[in-house]
Image 1 (cartoon, rainbow, N blue to C red):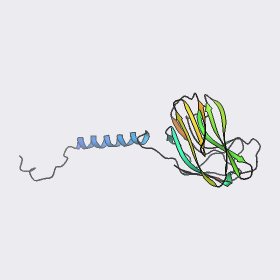
Image 2: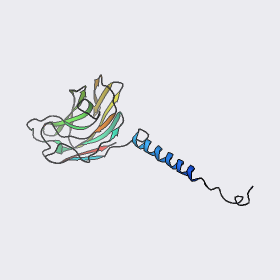
Image 3: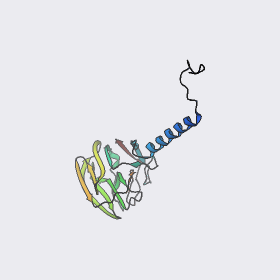
Image 4: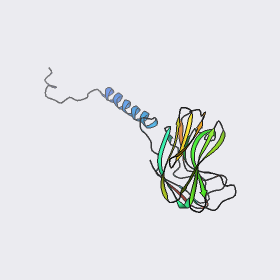
Length: 194
């Protein structure tokens, strides 16, 4: 044994080996970040400002085939009927072109103190809306949007609807959206527990 290395702790003396180990670690971290190795949770709170359709924070989030959540049905979601009132979208999953292939939990006011929910689907560019029922505003409820074996499932407060014959093409989170054609009459907040 060489006298110079006899009593020294082991040291990595090959800089090329160290560089390759570092590169492999960085590549593995990037793969896990941009694939399903780590689950990326969406934000817990979103806001749509008065006069707007889109929620903040902005940005795209790739998601898996299953979103299970609790949400707060806020009383500020109840507003007077508006011309062109359609369904507002709470949350969902879909292809990048969500008007082609997607599923969302949609809502609109129902009377003075309740909110009507529905499954809001696109299959090959054709829209289909399936009612789920109404809940009282001012409380927490469970919900879900998922894809399995050619079918989208949307649930709210223990009720669910299904749309069959859907092609799977990877999913992106579809965040809260106000409309139809009318914008939000005032600031709306959306709160989730994932």
